[in-house]
Each structure stands twice: as structure tokens, then as C-alpha cells.
Image (cartoon, rainbow, N blue to C red):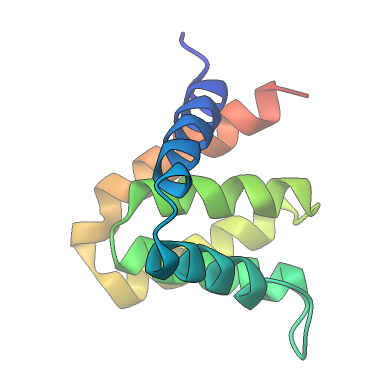
Length: 115
């Protein structure tokens, strides 16, 4: 089985470097806004990541789901909380989100196997 976590992170880093190297002010500001929005604030980082996971599932963005799953994992959010969050996303997003749920489970398992 390929290492989907490493492949995702290497691709994301390589492409982000290329994108940011073009020195587009708007894109750089969007990246910065994204980084700052998920920083500790009135809501803690764990809560923000779970919210980001729900939004990403409902919007059906697999890259975003992977990113938030990995951050949740690194933040020490228990699998039970992640699964409950995914269930809320599925409720809100409907059955069209089920394929993304499958990929989310697969990615979480890959994160656990990296231990």
C-alpha cells in the first residue's frame, strides 16, 4: 500500500512552494488568512480543526479533509471525536458525502499506522 500521508504532504508542500514563489499578493494574503484563522483564539485549535473538518466534508474537498484530519491527529484529538465530527458532516452534507467519508477513514487509518 502506498503511503498516502507522505504522498499528500509532499505534493501539498511542493505545490504550495510553487504557488507562493509567484509572489501574488492576493494568494499570499489568502494563505496567511487561512493560517491565522486556525490559530488559537476565542476558540481553541482543536475546536477550529473539527469545524474545518466538517466544513471540508460538506464542501467535499478531499485535500482539505486530509489536512484537517492530520492536524486533528497531531493535536491529539481522539478518534471517537473525529468520527463523531464526521458523522455530523455526513448528516449535514447528506449521502453525497459518503465517498469522502470513506477516504477520510482510509486517511485516518494511514495516520494511525504511521505511529
